[in-house]
Image (cartoon, rainbow, N blue to C red; front, side):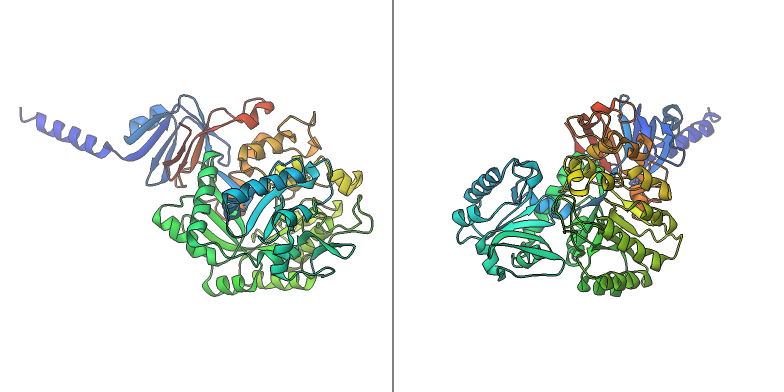
Length: 543
């Protein structure tokens, strides 16, 4: 009888060692690890918020006993999706404003504003999302109807790209805007000596700076509302481009309390107080928040003709758009950002703006490097300038849905020749061998499945055009998946902690109802997220 005790003791010790040595085990899945070999597995194991193991269920279930076991029943699992260029906070605020996205006429937009005003009776009326290119009459609207309906209450409504807006006279009076007034890097439209209400680029800020800052509760509600919607489409990290430094503590406190679980890569706006703040304190890094970059605007948008072109617009002779600041300003900013070791990310749409910024970057970076300076959008390029991305390791950060949104009218702005070197994502991918993808939401839809679909199919949600828009610049599915996972993480210097499902990385992953690597292209926009995990904890469940 005594001889049994050593064996029983060893059995008890073995059981104790195996007892709950993992938090979560997900099996019977198709796990796309997006590692360097793009391997797949059927099981992942999570402990302490990180991936503990990836492999075969038979092996891992023998090795680990988890507190929770999930049978994925053959569902595909991917690394949590990352949006490499978005306006997360602005999107959240927009959920509380007039939503003009998808309106088919100025009258319809005004009706939406009027309906909003009945529900929200006090203060400024703000809204966003109108696009005259979607209307039968494709000219900018006039403020006359807004003045008639709101003679006293100020109204300002941003165009879908955020680079133009229309304000009523009450708002213009508060800001002191006068007919014929000019501003560098912007336009205050005046026709026959009268203000139309249209403001382009820097002119928009004259009015928006008069809008009272949102109270703390509004800010918190905006961030949490944005998070809820983003989790539902599988986003686990967002790059928020162009925030003020005052948002850092707000975001950090909400994350510390556990209310804001979304991981954020924040770029501070090109303003002196933001440089002073971050230069003095250094980069800010926690597991959920990374602040080490500055967002600079070189020009405006193609849709509002604020993009800076080398030659005049095809549909507006003698007009080339404009830079939003002087070239000297961009040179000075690049030098001080480089000297202090931060990342520079510049919005550049037109071929002239891209050329200016690429040459400034090249003069500072001086060839191959690992500073990961970014050109956001890199939308219209002169063919001879494309090589500057590769020569100087400059990262093109692009948004595939811009191509499929703009394709209806971009040719009218650019002409056939220039259009050939616009939205050239495959060519840009070849420059450095990797390319991060985003949406620029709320300019585009937040759904990364639309990003993936637009990147590989180059079509709109209705399947137009047959064969795809400039299909030679489509990405393959492996490239598109990397663009919203590991390459997006790399653009943020975070590829060692996220972007793929490998041991030691954060257990951020998403389960979809269909396998986007195998289904027909036409099915991609219909794919739904069934659940989203951050640190191995479910933050969204379709049920």
